[in-house]
Image 1 (cartoon, rainbow, N blue to C red):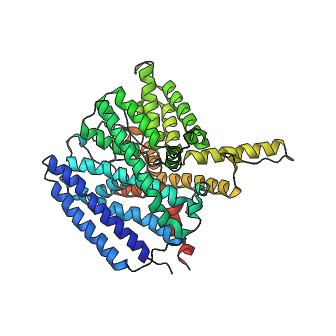
Image 2: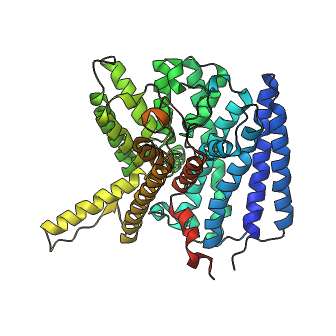
Image 3: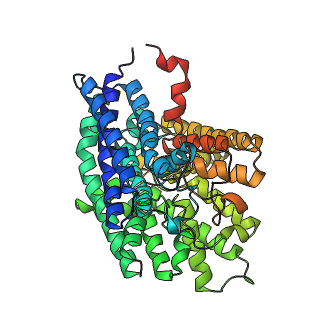
Length: 482
């Protein structure tokens, strides 16, 4: 029988931590003389109380997680965290419904960046900080999960990155706790460097800190309605490009580089493919712009590379309304939405390594057709690529696209137009943020959507962030049998 005690124990600790984190935006509200500090204080007390109660109730249990417990814990942590992170939104002077609040919290923790808040320029400072901090926490959490949990669960080919220390489920939590220290230090360092860079680029301190948190986490929440475009600064956009890319590269490779292997990043096959795809899509987007309505030369290229980087990394910032660039640009941005960044980063989508694996499978199959007697060994980073990884990647991509199709149809049945339904499903399951069209495009937001669509999109964000299989396996009856 499934043992829920260690699951509740871990959730209790994380809830208590989340509750303590709510004191930071409360302090921000106090510093800016906003009455909403009371909202964060009340939310903090409730969250900490429930978290401690869960911990006290289950503290006698051994923290021993099997495969099934790991699957349940991974999904339930994100759902419960979003449920409690939504409380400050509900009780703030923004007067949001719980549906909108949960959507905003889930969008934050999954680093999606879709928002239902209108009037960010005049929103309470604590709420703006809380949105950014949620994305920062979610980005750090997904990096640790991608390194410590998903490879062990063998989700969609992630076993390719399985470290020797994770050979058994019993080693998940101790090893995750050990490696999270170095990853957290790296994450904090990148965030600080990004904030300083934004400051030198002309941002005020508060904007620089909040945008640094959402840039490194490739989340995309902004403190301005016009997103990065509000600053009208080429320097700000180039800083964003650099750190969006930094957040989309494998964090373990950063650690190895710091440990004395500085060339490990450029030698990685996934990283090289990431930059190649990013450059190709940026050039295509640049060429697709209407030259009669936009600036020429370097300005057009900056607009293209900034927005393509933002979408492909899953950040979701916008500097211009690229939805007006025409159908070719729409296809380019939709493709970038699905591809995503590198495995082991804060980025999202299908992931570049899966694209590389699929291309290697196609190449091997084509060569076998041409040379039936030949022996061809697929390799990834110089090592043979097991067939079970190829099968897992193919299954993941199929299920990812099938989930996208189902969500698109469901949104259409709720009365949304085809562009909103298709791009909304794509941006939610890929955790990108803005969609296409006048409603949820880069110049709009998700507030006008019906509540049913918001709940469906919130579920899609969770499914995409946890790599599809992690959530859907819970609905298989055999999973719950001994």
